[in-house]
Length: 164
Length: 125
Image (tube, rainbow over all chains, first blue to last red; front, side, top):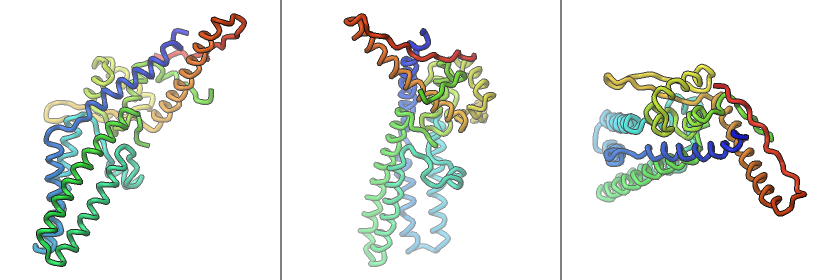
């Protein structure tokens, strides 16, 4: 009977602890500006494809992935919580196996493709200024979505909505 | 009652550790888990070894510079056990609430029968 009385308390305590873990999942000050840099580097891809030799196009891609990897590593180190899809699990279980923040991740992917397409068409018609504006808007949208992604993960940590 | 309790993770410390690891992170570092659960280093070390031996938790040890870092992750077995146990706790909570409600109403009517809450498994420390 003593344990029975304590069981609802155990669930309440678990909720408090999950809230504490979620509160820890706040990005450091450099994370979102760093994401802006990573996306900005990524969105220069279309410009480099048009104006630079092919080898530089791949260099841009590698630089984007490197900055992105550094940011995720830094976030994991700063918070003590490793989040987001892992490359090996993605190969095994598909791109969207990781449930927390999935909606924001899909939106980021869609925005990335859309901005790339818009830039490609604008540059084909020689509208460099409009393509730069599209890249700037794309970076802003991606940073907002990145922030939403972290918010959704914090919410998942609170609700206990883990990975499969 | 359809969900089954797991006596191994019934103690609150182990339930906390498993519940936090299942919350949505892939790996959680020692200090983050200790702070969220508000337990001491020694308690976390001891309980995590027991959970690892039972196959509920996976442990990865590494270092950042000279500082050792230990990371924890819930295994599939641990996740299944936790989900069952939490479902059982949820059902138990409902039963206790219903029993309390009946008891409150029954205070006005002495002929009402009281329903005894279900048995709780003994915790294996």
